[in-house]
Image (cartoon, rainbow, N blue to C red; front, side):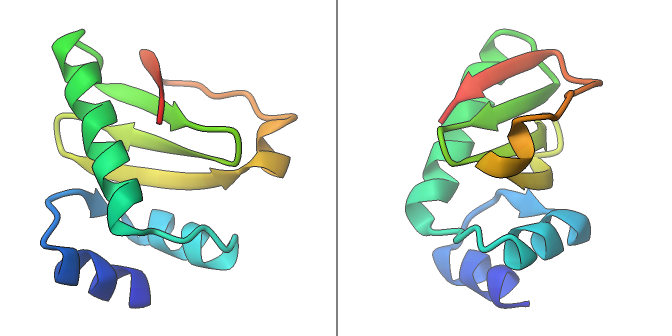
Length: 95
């Protein structure tokens, strides 16, 4: 629940599903206000191109995001990305 508290303190409108919150916490992905801003920027850019479900990633972590609902669905670390196949996305954005 620390992640949810951090989001509330930051006053951000990006939502994390319960699944995404637990994945971020168990995988040691720190959700900072700067990262929230990057995620929001990714959603804005994806929405401008008409994407609805995106993979937003950098070299260390990735997030699957439902753009119309502003909701992060899951969080993944670099190690998990190596053998992953991402389905049901229609766009990818670098954070």
